[in-house]
Image 1 (spheres, rainbow, N blue to C red):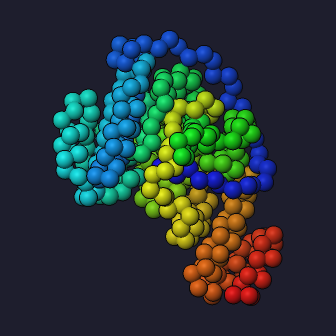
Image 2 (image 1 turned 90 degrees about the horizontal axis):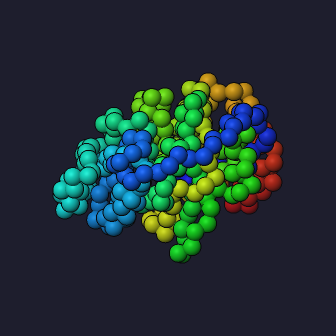
Length: 324
């Protein structure tokens, strides 16, 4: 599953502007007969354990109607299952690329550089599109809109629930950045991009975690205009192997992300203030991880920096450091 975790509660931020009504979708025809040309890029390690998931993802793309499809599967890394790669290469409706580097961000970029559609989207190999997803997104583009982002569903134990709470979904188009910092509604299966507006080099990143968080703010800094649609068009599966999102390394990298990658971007002052508050919260999370790992000195350092940067609300946490 892609990067879908909560961003945490933040203070109020300046409005980013209404995106306006998007209007009704056009009539949908059969695939290949009419509709815009859409490239869908699926990065995958192509390993045996995920073969069934990959087939499901591809089937969900091939089932789309009302668009002309280009399906690009990028096999990244050297740990692939040869039989699965051979199976994919034997399917003429797929374009299969191979990349020696085992890096999902590099795989997305590699696929994008080979894409020819007027619009492009990504799908992780354990996620799936819902019926009509791509045609609906294409139908929501209007002049001045560069990225369309849809709501999605998460499946746990056979049941679907919304990934974006209705209370936040209702605020997204009025407060693009602020709503994102409350809940991550921008992720790999959620978004479609206009190829003529969104440059491929914006996806050239080598981040270990938080690729889509960084991409969101990079698009914002570039002046890309986004529209959010609260109709679910994709499903992620929480029952697949656990992500690294709760790991100590993930938490530690968030500090690097804010300091070295996001805060240097040309973002509105209100957004930067909110990001600094977010970094303060991240320092507290890092301190907790360090304490649990028995690294008390590192835990103290993170806590002291947290408080000095304005995290006075975390002062009660000091007693945990003293007691341990």
